[in-house]
Length: 199
Image (tube, rainbow, N blue to C red; front, side, top):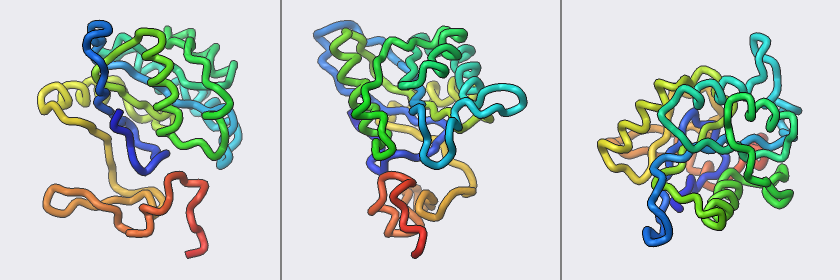
């Protein structure tokens, strides 16, 4: 699986191409995952924080429910979030273990663990669509348009970007159609919690 080498980034949409053994089962095309650890170190219970009388993560579930994606999985260790997910027919079958539910866990670690679980369950697919719950303004049309782009261009990966409102270590720029970090030091950090805030 080709994953984001820089770890936990709050992108609206991340699509990753999965390399699997095609002889096991017919591939299931696009599969969506919503990673949502129970305890955030930056803001407690941020995924269930009420925004306009709705839990923050519900916006992602609503968008996913209207999208073209049929296979939808929640990656959490939080029972409250699981209850919300079930209302929108998001699968909570994946038992997110403690080893990938720590404050030191990167997004890549969680995706790889889910990927291995999915293979064991004979759930195969071409692309993994990663939807962070911290992007409530993303709607189902954004998801569907991303899928269409992937199908048309046959990219290995795709992620959404916007004008920077983030920490400089999470900011990128484009030069001649290629992207790079604004700050070279960004490559040293895989998670926001590890940022050198004093520099």
